[in-house]
Length: 120
Image (cartoon, rainbow, N blue to C red):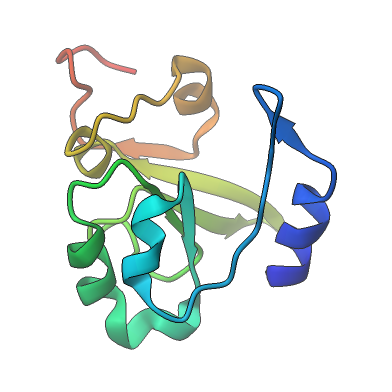
């Protein structure tokens, strides 16, 4: 996944700001990130990692099994040889992050309640 992220981020911008990929050895450094991809190699520390990030305004993403059930926000899934994603709104709602309705519409599944109580 790392080389794919590097390729996607190369020369990319979001709102005219450059995208940087940084590999961290300590999850506490992730509090200053906007998006954190947690590798499946972190499975033994997943609960602790997510607890450390707590209510920080950091979008947590992984392809680890049961990531959403552990409190992650977006989980990549392999569905019929295509990469899809599922969303845990309860985890997102613990932060000040807002996911667009367009993003939620293309998710393979959305769990949790939207902040307004309306369906996504």
